[in-house]
Length: 264
Ligand SMILES: [Ca+2]
Image (cartoon, rainbow, N blue to C red; front, side, top):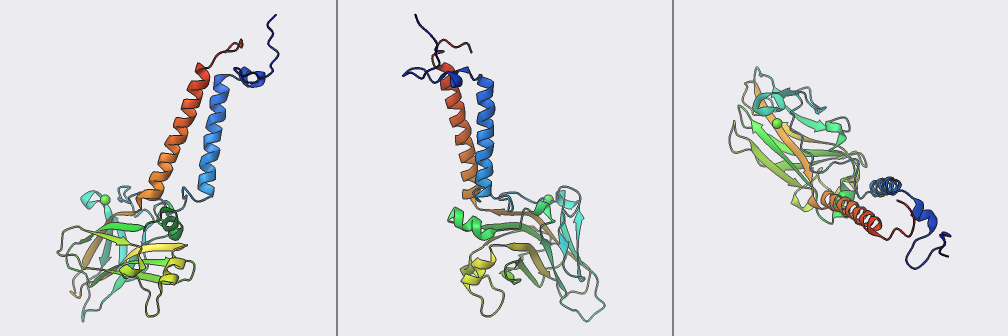
């Protein structure tokens, strides 16, 4: 007489496993996937600090936490052109003085998406990290435009000099690689070893502007600021998709397996 003792056989899994309902297996699969994702975040594969490919468009009707580090320059929201961060210098009585300032994002700006461990991203991706933003000179061409970042590792502020925009009232896109050889420096004696070490903890990143020597009030703009390197984000997305697909395939195969005398 055939019995259902629960003992494993070549065609049927153990009784306890066979008694589990499909919805319980699905819940367990979801918990497994969640644990895997937490593991990936914990080991740095999916970074929680720097958010790659996230674009600050200033479409939320405020400064998104970005601020000016200088009393010479204001950093405020404007709704013009769909919203951007507007940097302003007041009228000077003369003689002209090259006022400057940096509009920066720290851990309190844009959800802290632009600060953290840049070096880790570069190591994991095996490629460089890139910053990109659009810049507008509304009335006058600036004296200088630079990309700055301050490292919490050393306290040093690194600078990358950008070419002046070609014309006023036209948006110019700047793309800057975090490649020491491209021209990053904090001053005499700067080395690539220091640069890479300092990228391990970026305290803030920002756009430095020195005003035109014209005496009149003048405004500049920043928009669409983003950090990106394709590989890490794409890798995690693909890993997540592959994991979900694997779970789905296993569930489908188990659902299609012989019932072995156990009601489902
Ligand atoms: Ca915008």
